[in-house]
Image 1 (tube, helix red, strand yellow):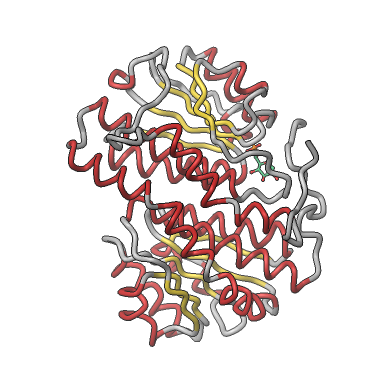
Image 2 (cartoon, helix red, strand yellow; image 1 turned 120 degrees about the vertical axis):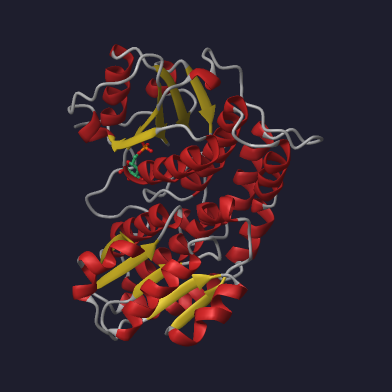
Amino acid sequence: AMIGKGEHRHFMLKEIYEQPQVIGDTLNAFVQATTGHITLPDLPFDLAAIPRVTVVACGTAFYAGMVAKYWLEQIARVPVELDIASEFRYREAPMPEGGLALFISQSGETLDTLEALRYAKRQKQHILSVINVAESTISRESDAVLSTLAGPEIGVASTKAFTTQLTVLACFAIAVARARGTITREQEAEMSTALREVPARAVDVLNHDERLRQLAHDVSEARDALYLGRGTSYPIALEGALKLKEISYIHAEGYAAGEMKHGPIALIDENVPIIALAPNDVLFEKTASNIMEAAARGGKVLLLSDAKGVERMGSKVTWTVTLPEVHAFVAPILYAIPMQLLAYHTAVIKGTDVDQPRNLAKSVTVE
Ligand code: G6P
């Protein structure tokens, strides 16, 4: 069937707005409606017996994998290694017997990811993939597939594929934790409840669209932008920077907030907007002190936090966006959405081709 943009000006915006629906669809496949239990399809290997998980992907899917690394380590206490596919496939990494190799890909056709999968297979790893296009090469060559139910994604810059990847990976982390006995039933129930609230909270986040459109006017005047976050907000900062550079052609860098003092702090002045992701989690105070360091050097900071965070830090920064207060576990899924909207509106203001940015392809099947 032909896919249209509906009421939206671009596929990217349509796909951003589809997120509450497709995250909900994806959750329905993994969370039992009555009990809230997370259930995966039957896997041909034992999650409890895995010595290490190796996560490999490209682009936005790689940042989903990076969030998964934090989740799997913290919740399931399993060692995780993570790499981009173009590096992993050639670096001859030793892999432990019985290890799990996890590949994440919207298209299921990215050549570097596919070749990394084949390497992991030769290293006798179990192969699990998180894929959006069910009938794809990576799906076929995997031992098991966890599907994102994002539906077709047309915009070259990935949006709903990313948040549904995060949704699947969150469920996977909980399932691994349960298999390894590292979480209690109560903790699982709490995380499952938080996940099931994500579609409704995503609607709340989308309500900040107009505010983000206004802020995009400031961002669109910049030549460079810096995105900061800690913990699972760090990969979302990287994804935010990727979104902005992909479609607006503004140079952007994502950085771990605590690493700013080792380099990017030298770049800070009033011309480089700093987008700080600071959900009110255990790392909030640490991120807040990095924000203060940036503001003290004349940096104009856009703070994304919840009401408590904005109350605590709002007077110290130039701009704020108050996002819903959510369980720290699901914050990266929700904080990804303002990253998309900010990049989208900035690109529209700059007049670039949002859905088909120059030099980029939706699926990279060559090396
Ligand atoms: C290209 C796309 C990105 C995507 C990456 C990985 O660079 O433009 O949006 O994240 O490939 O693609 P995949 O299909 O493997 O997720």
